[in-house]
Length: 129
Image (cartoon, rainbow, N blue to C red; front, top):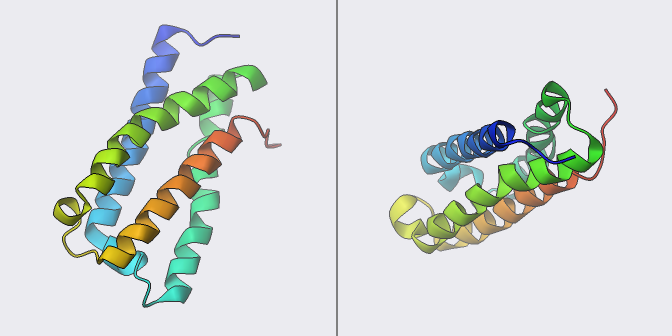
């Protein structure tokens, strides 16, 4: 099953909305959440990414009534635009996240990869309701 144009655009916009929300959160609190000086908070933040990314993907699949095959495309459509924009965030991290230390930017890159990996995995791993 392929996704129609309206559904594809909606998925891209949803992914961009999630990306923007996370970018704003990290702009405001990334220097605290990703600080290597607080490993307990950093670990908790990393662990929170798994249920948060599942919570912004699986309900979308159910709401749109997507088949297993369509979920793979949907996961990619939700992820890829944000991945391209995150390239800019990482390249210009010193400007975009002025309060974030260089060490925290490394954690930022790691959490980005982790979050996108989870979203992409949701396209392949069905979750029972």
